[in-house]
Image (cartoon, rainbow, N blue to C red; front, side, top):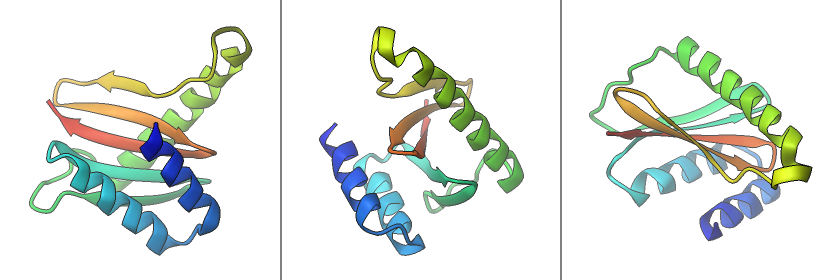
Length: 114
């Protein structure tokens, strides 16, 4: 939660591409199992892939997946008054785990190897 709050403060201060790139780098450094980080903000995708790994999806497939995740996140928020704010969403696929974490209006997507 502290990491999420820190990212939120940084995004509020400076919304340029370099800041997103730094955030992606920091997240990749957190754990060697994180293979990909994507920040989807108002139709713009900022992303970073761990060097030496190949992405499973094309750029177009990633953007479609992220826009769907942002939509699903917005539907989760509709029950906030009854069950509380969503903290994160975890989806397990055969090859990866995908964690979606909100940062204000920004969806943060992490893909993690099994």
